[in-house]
Amino acid sequence: MSILRKGGRVSRAVAIVLTSRGWDQFQVPAKTGDLCERVMAKCDQGYLCDVCGEEVDNISESDLYLRFVTGQITSQALLASPERHLKCNPIVAQFIVAEQFETPTADGPFAKSEMDPPYVAEQEDLMTRGWQRLQELYEISDQTPLTDYPLPEFRRSTSDR
Image (cartoon, rainbow, N blue to C red):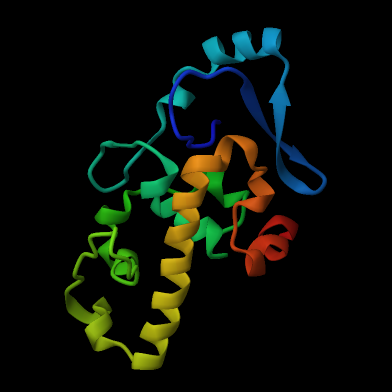
């Protein structure tokens, strides 16, 4: 299992291991890293989107990691949950309000226009901050432990579950 990273040549490997504290990531020594790169090649290709079937290229466009950083799923659920592009999940993505993000419109009963305004405001705040965190992680994920990916208010609750 690999974590979605910025991309480029892998200079070291990262192992994701279940410990007594939950899932944790460890740097793997260079010689072992070379072996891991060969063994983990298919995992390093990334996750496939459950909706369109295309590869989710990086963490900045990941619905799965947005759910993780916003406390909706635990680190253990990262292994078992389906991945989607944010653009392929308009029900969640409609709450991201940022100039750099092309916000889709969801139709039907799950459109935010059909929801209570206080709930919409709460979700817009949370999902926008989560999306901004994904943009940060795109740049620093290779230096950041998985337990530090979530927004501050969710770090303890997602790693302790």
